[in-house]
Length: 518
Image (cartoon, rainbow, N blue to C red; front, side):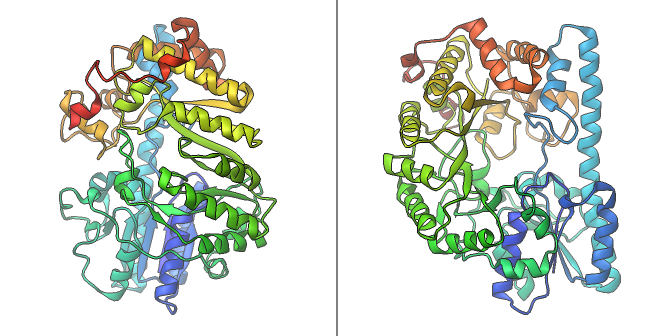
């Protein structure tokens, strides 16, 4: 079996590694190799893929497609989608609109070029494999495929297995020759069954990844380990119990949170530590998804300390409403040097309407616990403006909330990351768009045509034009510190509410998303 990570940003390829490790434990005699095309110059990827296939002669090719960043909020591989889009849609200066249009054409070329290139790599890789092994098959999975599986299947060789979500059990069955009926997959050329994305993944017992074995089948491992600034991924759990309106994690990984055994996680980290790794990224959807996982997080961090890994640094996405004083002390003691919180809005009213499940007052209290425990590192706070029911009073509330976070951590430690949601299939927000007539069933969620892009880069009126022009001003003023500049401009134009208003969520008012989508 040849596992191929298709070209993307060179983030540590934890998915293919875990698949190879799991299958080695189930089939110890199975010859495997990992090929990470993200670690190669783009001009070399097709040549290296075909040469590897010819040398290894696999009967099964498993392609992993990590991401399709159509509307990335920051500079992507083809430029800044947000800036180019907003220049086209909202700039008053005709020359600036022209600049945005030219930048948008470049983005379209990059986007469609990546799609066609990756699909071509699958087709050519399979064709080359069948020269040597006529019965060779291909499987395509990964994060991008789980989101856009209905669209991507149309461009694949007939019979390619399109995998949604986790692939361990699917590949086990494929290798054994068992029926794939009931697995979260379908064959290219056929129609996926309705609701495939919403089916729950199978529970598997996760054990420590055997990096001795991974090293033997993946020569590129050293390329990542020698880059000291990399965080190396380690997974401590799968699943997310929340219903955030724009997020697909809960359907891809399932709502059941499955905790990996603590000693297995530590054994995996120790193997990497002994190879010189000191930076770890916990790749869970959320490191502490709910309060019931607080004790699990404590147990893990205590075990890390007990194992003697005292000089590591680690980071994660964290729901900061799920922290207590002891956990805060353990997080600092074990070397947490960065975390991200995705509160989306500093208005408790909007947080409730978007099904985020956050209590913003509790988030502030727990952030103070982290500072009391000695945390003096970087925090990224994700704001997704104008998702639903944004208006001047909620903007003032978000400004107030962000200023309070700056008072807690220090303004130089808090970075506001400004997002505008890229509408994705299978989310509550998509259904809301259908109900409100903003999009129609049958739309193409992978399209970058301007008439579609304006709907999928979620920034509806009446606030859309306001946010568009304000973000353009921020890009002009200080593109290197875009997030803080946006917050400053929002405060200039709308002011700052009393903090108490940010933390209050009135039960009456305009309809919530929960009402709109049931």
